[in-house]
Figure 1 (tube, rainbow, N blue to C red):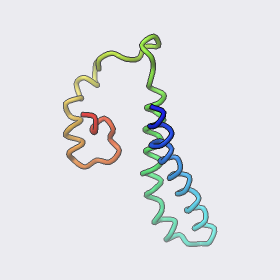
Figure 2: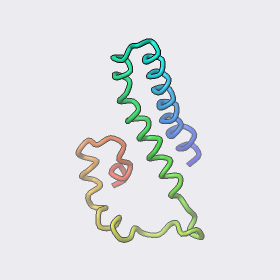
Figure 3: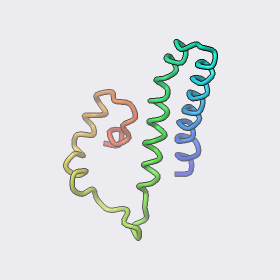
Figure 4: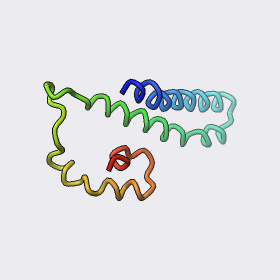
Length: 98
């Protein structure tokens, strides 16, 4: 998990910071075309960062209510995750695990 946090998640954070810096620089120069070209990176890296932040917040040891088998809606929707992965959706970690 340390590798996942320090490398994979950190890549999203670095990419988000870089995109924000690039957009701010382009806007300060009045280059709104460049800012618009970089904007999709906000979705990509920002979404990756948010997804991983939620992942870390939802981890819990069994003594704190974590662990166990899926229940409720997660159990009902679990069969659809491989379908989502095959559809080419980016960033769907649940689909990738399907």
